[in-house]
Amino acid sequence: MGQLKKVFQVNRQGFNLTRGLVIVGVMLVPLIVLSAINQEKYWLSVSFGALFVGISDLGGPYGIRFRGMAEVGAAGGLLTAVGFAIGGGPWGVVVVATFAATLFSGLTLKFGVHRFTAAVLLNVWFLIAISVPAGEHLDLARSDWRGQALAWLVGAALWITFTLVVWLARGRRDQSTHIPEIPADRSVTTLTRPVILFTVIRALAVAIAVAIAFGLHLPNADWMPVATLVAMKSSLEQSMLVAEQRLAGAVIGALVATVFLLTVDNKHALELVIIVLGAFAASFRAVNYAIYCAAVAATVLIAMDLPHPTNLAAEGHRVLFTLLGVGIGVAVMGLAALIQDRSARAAAPAP
Image (cartoon, rainbow, N blue to C red; front, side, top):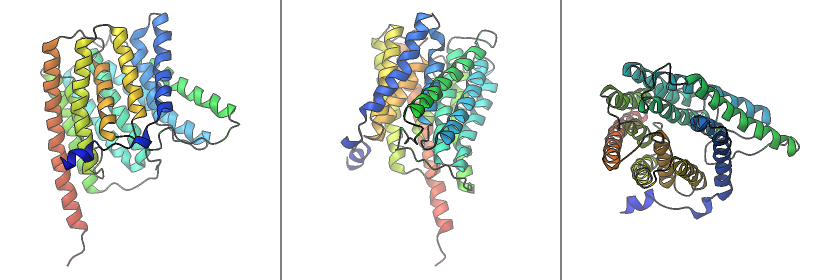
């Protein structure tokens, strides 16, 4: 019970309503505009493009901010194109691409924690991108990967333009980051052998989850890779408490997503649910990491299944596959603990 209390310990001073309202605007405005022109199929790409580029905004001089946001925008556009292009195709290609994307996101730790955090977010988006065409049984010719990639870039450009206008309106002064909880470190470091080994194992775990979901053609297993990624430690240096909070968040998020997908059968209402959950996650980021992870997981899982009809049996299968994904994540966390233990012993001075 003591450890459980630590996992859900609340910091009331960390609540940030303003940040949540910004997320509502970022995701709601594209929804209204795209609904008006009957192009809602691009909403996820536009809104997540703006959202993730916004999270990657480092703060400080605008030149540095622009380069960082542009990097994330370009990388996200590429992942969007690849994800929507291959999602409905041969499962082996999807597995290899997932392994490569997850491995690369882990190795970005070399370029600082800030870039690493942005890469992990893009990794989550890639899992959404491969799941949408697969769930709709869209092949390369019908997946509209070019349009989806362009939509992501439009979302990224909208956020960058917004920050430029604000910067000019404030007299070209430096601006602090929107999410101070995310470390701003972007210094280049050397990746140790244990860190590289953990990164490879982590990429293999997500690839195995994708192989099970796509290779066996299980229609409700698309939640498993996301659960695996969310439940695992992001890096070898991450504390066990944070890993436990991610684990709890993955399970709670799956249950929350299941409730909404079962009780809300209107697509527009589910889109509003995604917006509210995204705003909730942003507002509670510094209140409790487990609650934040639960809101993020629920947002992502609902987004993945937004185009798909659902029923009680389907949601039961999704929760089951989520638990399987969490199990894979727990196994990787166990390996991470062994790697950390061996690293500590190797670094300890001889008696």
